[in-house]
Image 1 (cartoon, rainbow, N blue to C red):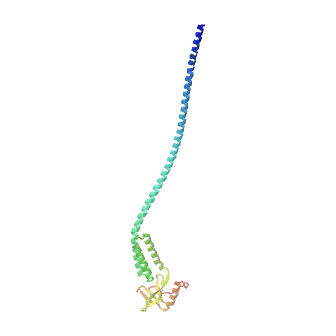
Image 2: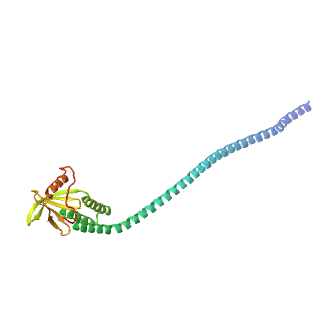
Image 3: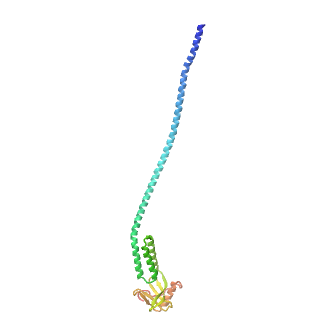
Length: 252
């Protein structure tokens, strides 16, 4: 009996030890599985992180390629812009040099033109003497004004030349006082372009012309008085234009 109890107790003592021995591999497997799952989970997280980084990097690469293409396009455009600007600057430099050269030639040329115009007026028919003298003086004052732009000087000279040119294309009448037969006499001057100058007294009794050869007024036959009267009326637009017989030329 005692022996049986002892065996029973020994058996009971052996049972926990056997159970513990049997549970040890399961625990180890569980721990290994747990570790494997943790490793797998960590690997999955690492993979997901790497995938996300890969997508970000791929997106950055696409953006960089797009930016590279855009910069290459802009570089080509700006190269063309710079080339165009260089051409423009070169053209402006050429024009600047041309303007400087023209100024060097034009300024003394305008002086020559005004001098020639002065000589021309002096040798021309004696009409509008004061007006033309004032114009010449105005031109000379303009050329001597250093503050005046060359373009304005050129414009004024051209304007004076146009006015003088117009004198040769029209007819006009003016009144002035002439010395006729030693006495100051009020007369009407009829200018036929630059071809001839005639005078007629206010009472239409005397008439004359400007003689270029002698540089003086010479009388005309009284038969021309009526013709000159019609001519002055036509110049004043008081009479319709018609053909007139006037002595134009060297011989009168």
